[in-house]
Length: 261
Image (tube, rainbow, N blue to C red; front, side, top):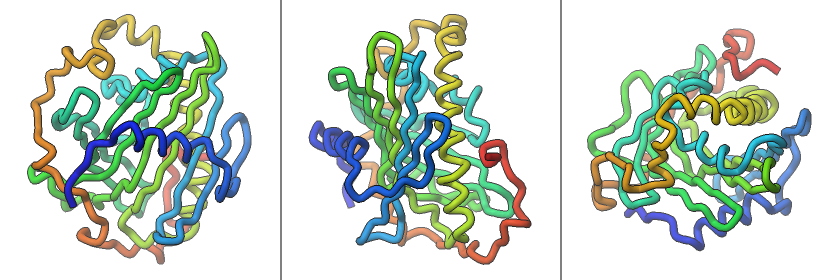
């Protein structure tokens, strides 16, 4: 399948999904974080959606935090590695991300095409998985597939914002039910709070670390090599090895930082 860079209608559709309540079931609501789930008829892969109100963080700051890969290494403790591979347009690039899964599950990684758009008082970042010939699956990781993942940031005034995170990911492994439940009850809410806390600290950190460098806002600062969309294809889940981890028991796992209640 050819890769298509999202247009305005794709971003509007994503925003509608973030704001819609129809078809979504509440899975968690506590401490300012709400998590919803949605079963998809045409897919075995469920969608998850989260929302957190960030009372003392501007929408612009949240947007910067989610783009700034240098800062991400400071706050994303589940991340193993992340880097940008190349740029497609002024608001689309391709990148790599790997993260730790609780033992004895195998660690996962992605190659995704990411696109972003400020739209009025809203900011959006969305991605989906692609295949790049120079970044094939690694033997020590399970290559997971993002069908659609992204953030919607809405401004609530001068000093407040709301963050939505929507994700539909195929982890390429027959995971036990307790893993899926733990994601919605523990991992996802804690990840949202972690972004919030990181955003509070970001302005001070950025003042000391290339304060004027924001290539996601100023494309002329982007030094990534240009790549053509023709070099990419959509990453189909059924072309990847499927790892059966469904028999792993919860007792054998070690909780990571993000999996404590």
